[in-house]
Length: 140
Image 1 (tube, rainbow, N blue to C red):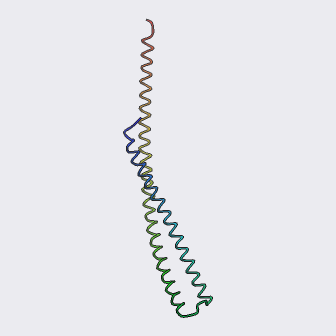
Image 2 (cartoon, one colour; image 1 turned 180 degrees about the vertical axis):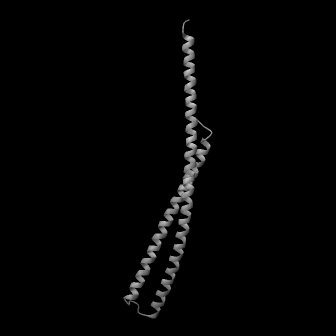
Image 3 (tube, helix red, strand yellow; image 1 turned 60 degrees about the vertical axis):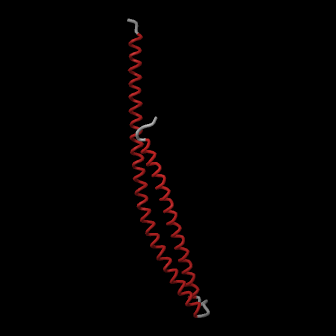
């Protein structure tokens, strides 16, 4: 049976699903950013190892390594900034997901209450009809 709450339930269910998808995407992006940062840190550590092992043969190698480490530092800073932004987005998305879930539960409760009231009213009507039938069926 349809109730006046069904449209709101559908609206907030769809919103909840969309916000949940966005939250999952955000979490995956944060994980990817951390993986990329770990890769950069490994490459930077490898560069330092090569420098300490004196595997460079010329000053050009040293200059290239310095530029490489500088680029890695910039990329790490960019990733840190992106991670911070994604975490801020994640907090906002969690809040929106929770709000949609709260509203969805609220309207489902109201729908269920209306359905229960309808069922109780129908039961009372049927009981009254049965009582009338019994009273009318008695021979006087």
